[in-house]
Length: 227
Image (cartoon, rainbow, N blue to C red):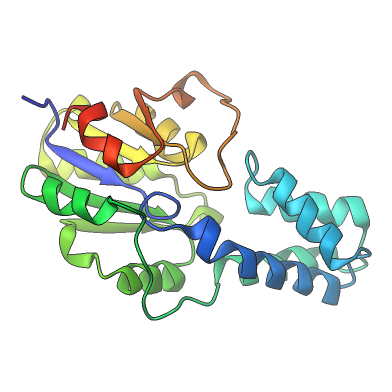
């Protein structure tokens, strides 16, 4: 019998193919915004540098490095406008889920308390969740704002408080070693790394960046994690 009582899912590149469906256009709009603010490079150069840095850095760090490398007479505006464009992408009314992820939610909902823990622009994350049509699968949805220093461990600790169980009875699933895995570990939870999207290749920075389980496809989630 599984030891878990609650499961916390990430959204972007865990349930939704954000890297494939939304990032290309969001990246283009972000780079166009930087060029409009005086960035001294071509669109292709900006896009290439963003792609090269995506695995290991936040987009605040990425756009700051792009501005530093190529130069702009409005550095603050260039970075601000790029972040606004990147984290507020156009979201279609309907989006597909990653293969087998909906089946997992439907199966696991009858066995565990499911939570969605995501970070980003509140309005954009709400649009993505509605476009996927998955609100009803979760007992509670957390949308955190990294720009004001929020971390996912605050949501994980809140889940433990609300549910009244031990940290090791929570499983955190996501695609970022520096977020769902690290913050999950720091809250005392077990973690499952979903190696998918443009952050694959992220280099562990702390001992907590090493997951208990690693999968590359949703069909492997239940057997690998013993759910």
